[in-house]
Length: 209
Image 1 (cartoon, rainbow, N blue to C red):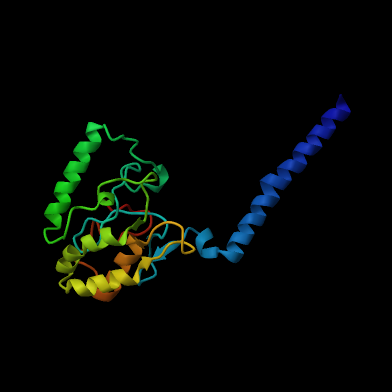
Image 2 (image 1 turned 90 degrees about the vertical axis):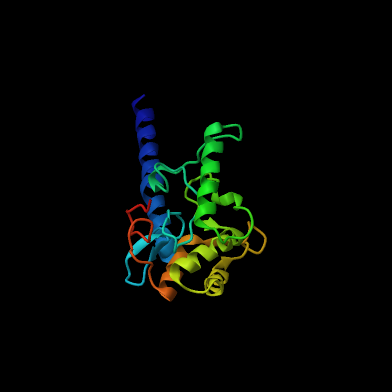
């Protein structure tokens, strides 16, 4: 029995060292060597080098001079520590009321928008942290953003066009726009929207409402 116990302890120790120490170190090292930006969280910085978010995480924008992302049900909204969807089905009255209220708000905030409100602007993603919108949902908001920034809508749309990402490998997914990257580009080209407060570009760790 003692010899069997010794063998079991040796096997457990070897397994612990291999899978609990060496393997994580090797994967972490390769990640830092080959994909350091992605391994560190794909962090995004502003023109001053301040971290304002991650390319992989959606965050809220409420100021009219910024494009708004999809709504979020993650925690209190856009909470990376509580990624989740609303889990509300199509028969949910709560979901219907929330969507109806969002449609009314969006129509009021975007009086010059063409066509109906895009569905993704009133529906949450499964994670609540989707950083992308379709080009159509972004362009729908362009008139509001241009008016708030005091520039021609064509100038805003030209910036949007440069941030449209194609399908992955040419076949996977749909064309999309990273909302945070686009809003940063607008600030670089046209300047920040005053006042830079809630709903603007927030530093890492600060959640824009």
